Image (cartoon, rainbow, N blue to C red; front, side, top):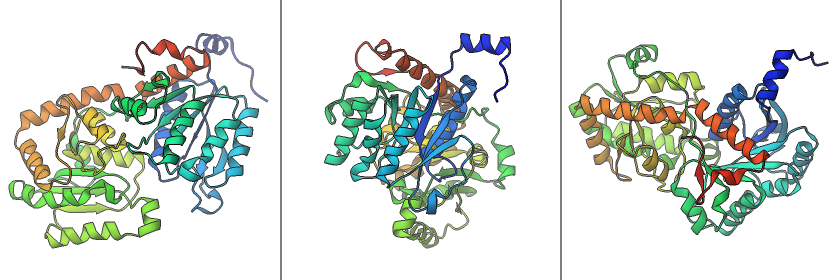
Length: 414
């Protein structure tokens, strides 16, 4: 039996009405960027919405027997990724709940069916309002992907994207109603500026100049180009270390084993740079990840896909005020614009080494980049992002989503 509410709590609840939301996504401890994103987002929203804490509808990995994750208490329902009937049952569960709205995290490959169309069966059956966040938006979709995105817009009251350039793609390629689109940053931890020496001691990197790359490892990350850049940097900065952190992506590992990681290790040996490249083959919890990030002098994302629309770890690096070197994929172009980082051509090791050497040899320029990145990162903290989502959920529930827009899509928050 629930305890009676005090007069103060009743007054607070009236002044700040609770929003009862269910979030559908992969979820920790599943090793997946969307799972981590959803955990961080809901934790931050809970601070704004303490009278109705987030409930999670977790999509489970078919490769894990019986969805065998030890989920935290907030996971109230599980959906087997490749079981169509499970999506129908999940919709019935949400419909019978006290939730007012569903917040859906969408990435191709996360949901079952042709092009992930099982999620559409769920949405067709749902009688709640829906806000969908798109984490992947192919520039050249196949017919199934095109149909899924179109129907996600059809069944959603609002759709969140993280960068402005994809809005025109959604209009031109997918022909959707851009007035449903809200632009909200990818969230980042709120970390203090500077202070890398303490974290170098903590992570046993003392005396090294560190450029880190933190991610689930897969061939589209382009890490071989970062490795090939190391010898030139070491000639100028002998104590330079490229730190590659993360285990192989579970999907890649299932299909190809460790062949990509082995090819990276082979390249390190061929170049005789074993003392200047280090692999940490683990999926790190957030606290440890941020320790390594704060110990870094540079951060790199040499990704190969020009159309990538999000990168959680690049966001984290910017939020921590680190100088980032990146290929010019869509997300990096926006986040590192206005002298917040360095963009280099795709598949160009020489450009990577040149950028690293120039930054490390010019402390004034480096400090300027760090400060610009950190200031921009204040707009991306999880508290700021949670407030933007919370405002959006409230507008959708009030039927006032049109208030966001004058001409097409709108950025929520600053």
